[in-house]
Length: 210
Image (cartoon, rainbow, N blue to C red):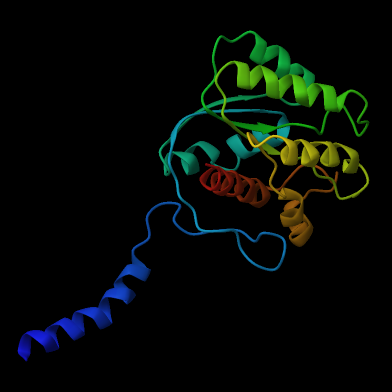
């Protein structure tokens, strides 16, 4: 009887203990844009390439991106320069013989809002990455406070996401729409808090891809 009572006590307390055991990256940290939060994380880590423009640069320099990803075991290589376009990234990747299986892309804001040639550049970059070893590509789409500015580019990325299982385009824009205080007066770049949110969002997106 005493052993049975002890077992009941342990069963009562075990769930509470499990709920409080949280590994790095084990819980979602930002809203999903629909009034809820993103799904639970499952960090896996390993080599990771991130390539992008000033938005990625901001997440790296002001948002602690490398530190956040290290918590989940990622070994990050970042290539980020202000004002860079998707066609620039194609040239950078074509100079390499290989890339990691996991790649983050933060491009689409430059050279401007025009979508002329963007679909071809997206396809060229995706092909160049896959040919060199990428198996999962997380592409953070461009965003502006003017919803029409990048609407066509976002449509192109979303359609490519649906057509190619290797490409994942999360809805980062919904987070910014719900938190406009993350955006500075030019409607494009982010505050320091916004860059921290982006870093966490990238971390979460990586944990949700297979």
